[in-house]
Image (cartoon, rainbow, N blue to C red; front, side, top):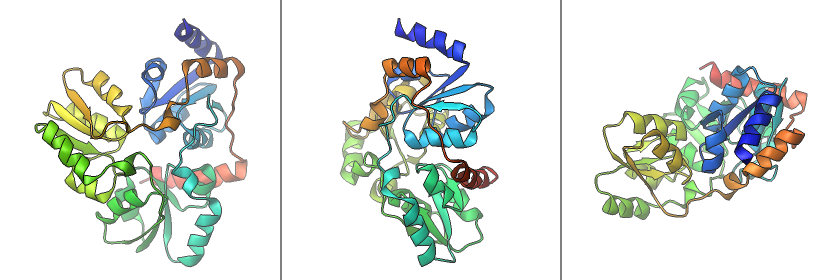
Length: 297
């Protein structure tokens, strides 16, 4: 079986297999750790391994390379990218800093290492509010997700200047989708990601990162949940909570980039240790400062 060969090679290479929550079930099953992007990169940095195989998208593997420069980081499919992360470039950040010289630049982790390197501090979907409120600046340039920026703006008195990027999956949800899902499942809690539009966030029972959803579902007394994030998350939730029921907020909410890695590609990468993801040293040093500043909060 291909899974057995992957596990054999993993031991031989002293490799760690990481899988984002949105990955296909067969990849979640062989992973050493499943979770959100920063959670996984931190796991890689804390693990005594030689190779980090990241089942996710490009910026996630870059973050792992920044936090674990001494390790070989491989991404089985280099064409697996995050469209939102591609909506902003390093030169865009530099222009924003010139336009708003007194503002702090808060950069969502869903960005390239080069964009992180131009930012003052990173944030996740879970800690964006805490990061913004920790800063002395009253004006914040928030990149690249306009919806996460709107969510943070609703929780702070600071002036948020948002870049107009978005996640094409979460941005598809509308208020009528929430109302329709509640009609179908009136006893269910509605949990949505903060990358969703404000109109969707306002109608939800809870707003969580993917890891936050997993924690809430385990702790909640509710037995039914409507999940407003990429549909792959439901597999993880069902595995963790076999006695509970989970329904997608809207059918067809799939990130195709998150589905590009396959078991065959994982096996090939473990055999060849390619494609390897590297970040230029000077970029990595600056990007790590932004990440470390966040982790210190």
